[in-house]
Image 1 (cartoon, rainbow, N blue to C red):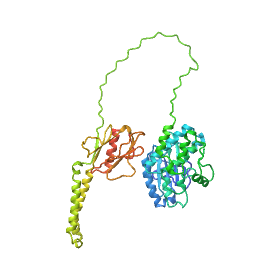
Image 2: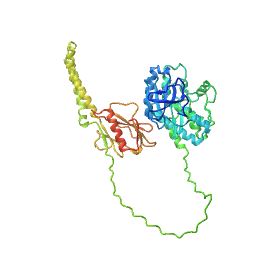
Image 3: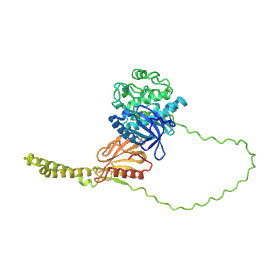
Image 4: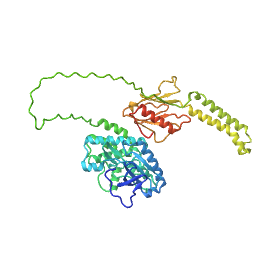
Length: 493
């Protein structure tokens, strides 16, 4: 994903799935990365796992889960996953082609970053890590080679794949997966690895971009030892950023800032760009002689505007998602539970010779109980206590248990919403809508059907009526959001 493809060798494939391989981009611990073309002619990056990893079923399972998580992050901060086959031999994954130089090459060609560029780089990487960590993924191998300086800002590549590779049983005891100089102490010592290790790597990346090296140069074992026992060298980092980068490189993960906290601090201290006015037009290189002033002429009468009849455009009608009939069945839930329990107790006390029954007799005996349990399940599903309304001003959740049915339970204005998608893991028989709020927007309090997720995510549970499939409801929800809030990016819903 860095530069045009190299020549292919005899061992390299010419096609992977439906994608034609046109060159080789690089090779890493997981396998090889190729430049390819989609059936429609788009440039893509094709990652093919090593053969020895493909033989490990545990790696395939982790690779599959990482692909599912990678799809949730989207392509704003990373390379969007467009296709994958974890069951192929060997497994492969296709991402969008990101044009640009990696951070290593940018540093080599343009030199160290100044203070303003370091603030911008740190904020972009912290924002990317915030999105990645919100999906339950830990990068584990953030380094300059995995940061692409694209036209619209830095992109972080290969997140999550390092975890699948690290957990495989092919890893030797005591070995370390990652890049020396950017690994956190807990990774080196085989401890618990979490989001804090990515923050540590971010600090080391900023030191590298400033022209230094957090733990010096030399063999990999020396760098690993210094990362665990030595203090980082921050002499190349500008004074204004030194304390912040030093906190990222703390030995104890609990002493490091979180990615959202780091993003907020970087944004608050980043220099505000001052727009430069357009330069005044200079004199002509061969000025013509000045003409004598002409008498002013009266301005021509402006043409009368032609009245245009106003066209009234009605706003999109609100779409209400609710489980019907709901309210009437709410009162029947507990009586049905009590009746079912009483029937079971009576049945157990009455049938003293149950052990002597054959299969047909037992089936006739338990059929009414099973039917009653199914009816109870239907009543519970239909008696959900809230509705979700998608309308032009925003998304409103109303509680059916409130004294006034029309009182909003929670209202989220569309002006505060940046994107809408679904969580990585679905919970329950409903559909979850994951909303990403703009930075600084107030998060609603936890309510029935609404779960705020720090720092700027909210999950709204949309009740699914009996007879409506999850796919149908998700499609209706996607269309309602696109119609009532066209500025909101709806991704993978």
